[in-house]
Image (cartoon, rainbow over all chains, first blue to last red; front, top):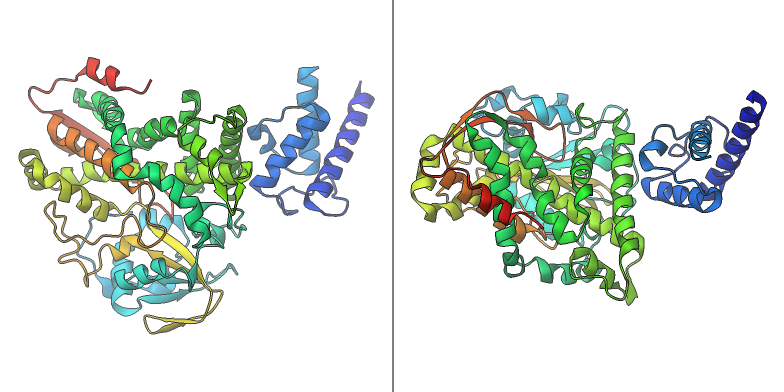
Length: 86
Length: 432
């Protein structure tokens, strides 16, 4: 169980880091890098949420997104939402 | 923000200690004392924040404020029009896309189609709806108990802009709160975590509501409400993008929601503080037109606007450099001794009254016709149905450097004899 969660967490982190890189045109963000510190805005955040829904099939409510906007925090939120809907 | 506390001791005002960005200064301080001092001694003042944020100019006289707002060729709106950009060091994401953040001629392309449905004549169709909303708002206040009028007023514009925009009823409460969050991002009652995330989240949630609504519309038949009009509009020959529609929806809603409530609250406060003036408008309905303009001047809910200079320019004996941000203070201009006789006297019969509470120039408030209608209906109902207004506690101001307003205003209203709450009428007048 714990191994699975860790693997899932790592995979989500890789996904979110790649997504930040793509949207904000920055090289390889780390787990603690924050979407807004990297140059995200409330408008690019809308694109981020739309892409996550398209690519992952996960609906991320705006308020959940703002609970934590670093790569690691957002990956954890996505994992929680996936688990809850699974 | 204190609205009526003269006389001051302007000589005591030390301008060097003032943080012109701090919302607390406007909430707990006495900006009118500061502005009176600045108008007299430093009408075009240069302010440098102590922590490295961008310096800006502070313009306080009516004539200078008007000039900045009128002359878009030298004072541009394209880089943002509110100090929150400097306060929070955030970029303007709406440049050239959202009507307030455009200059002519692009500005006119966005404004003209909206203007046609916002003229006083066009909005007159809303009269019965808004009267119903006013009655619903006042009814619970007329039971003789202490009533927080500011909290009720904060919801007031949403009840008619919500239907004029065609937004689902179940979103209105949240949208109303979100619009307040955007201008009171460090008020403890509205802040979430910290100022920046509060502003971002509020913007993002509002954009999402609008985006959902735009997605629901049939593009070939988008409806006649404001969102429908935006969906049919074009800019330089192209239909507006979803993003442009969303940003302009936001701007229209913000313009109504964060300003109108504070004229409502100011009305109750001013009438509590000036019972003789209240008596005058109760007995003489013909005074209510000038009274409403005086209430707009007295409250000046939009406190400042900002422009960026596009060239070196002389103003008030100072040289503003190209690229400098320039803040102009409407609340100060509306108490300018050079324009208003006894500016700190509240006078429901004041005439002339050249206040600029709605701004001046190309960006003059597009919702002014609607605001005047709604505020006049409120004033009529208030004067007809309330015998006496008493303050039942300290007014609490919203922490904001942009809006001069209230978050709490405990009042006790004594109903006028023979004007029992008209429940059935209020229900009939409510929005469907």
